[in-house]
Length: 163
Image (cartoon, rainbow, N blue to C red; front, side):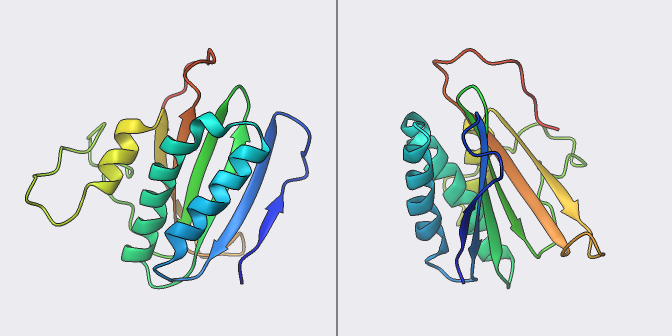
């Protein structure tokens, strides 16, 4: 079942929507359509192109490397900035999202490689990005959360760095 729900802080500069995605090859397209509607609804269409590419890469990563559903979360964090995050059930956090690899950004992918470009694009075009493991205890399901932040570069921002 697919659900979209606004957060409790409607009307302010911050908001959040969650979209439950089944393990389905159409999930990335559904995520893009939803993302466009949310950004248009909040007057942030200028972020659409970059946000669509990065959300698509995170959702595709979840589909390719997990066997179950995923959740896309879109969150307005004020001043023309959004956070896109994707949860999936696979606990493996790929470098450099894991921060243990020591790399601040992934190495460029060889032109002949069959894959590996998605997270490179996320790290290259996002203002900030990261990953968090999620435990399988009472606080929620096991897996990981990969996220990135996208900003309207015409609006001045405080410095944000990946954590």
